[in-house]
Image (cartoon, rainbow, N blue to C red; front, side, top):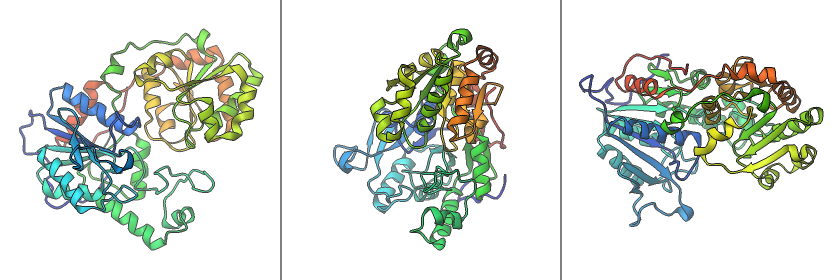
Length: 439
């Protein structure tokens, strides 16, 4: 990869002895105490891991409190939250949360970040952070290294970074101003091209890019971002989950038990899974489906047309409601398969990592990061994204004990702590690009 320009005054490396650990400030669009998304969870786990290794690390994250309240008692825009953690308000940002409307609040946050005197500023996301803030911090700390992990495609796609057509929910495979205009007819070609130019200019202030999957790395490259230094590095699942023993599922007993883990949002595919299950259970009444993360009422609020399919599935479908992340491995080892039916591309889903850690094979939409992380016929099954009939086929195939026994034995574990920290250390020291995959 080539073609990235450095921001003004940015140095290619750090003026430290090779053996010295750099101090690291991790900046996230949210804190997992208030939001349970994959990006903020990965960012916080990285902070905890580095701190646990004895690094001097800090964590700075955005927060949106009700009625635009400040996280600080005295009305300041940021507040300390733990010994080395800080929360900052985003009320002074533009509506898209990609830029700052209030130069005063942006500069206050830059002063906080610069005052932490980190050798490395590692951003997870740029939404609710601001690319203009990145540029200002690079100017304020020209001696520091600027790193970003790109968890999503928001710079590429204004539709929440999903690359899904706004009117038809079809997958979008290529970004052009003309195609974007059909999704956002209130825009103009000139404004869409200006947005892309501003995004590329803002991202080029980073010296190192980290992609959690080859899929998203290729998407950014095709869009026009071709940095000199980029690494494909899987997110770290965290010490707590890696400390739990990995168990092999009982194929004869569990092959017909399926589970979904997630929220009932329009892109996660529950409206594909439930009709598929209703079709499959009519052919094989022994199969069962557990839905973790949603109640029946919540699901019907999102997808009222699923009422008939839920009725057909009967007592073979169970809505298990919310679950604690600390319990997820135990829940996953209690089923034969984890199903991820997302209709959008995904990147590096935490659910897939958790299932791999549990040793439970997956059935996934055969697109994007899902198809990359789960190998068809090796440690899981693919089906055609958005197709309930094809998912029903996969469910029936998976319910056969011999299928489960064959694939469960090949489920790969996630990346380990030593490999993850070692890769970060090389990135922070400015070593040449390399790809880091889980074994």
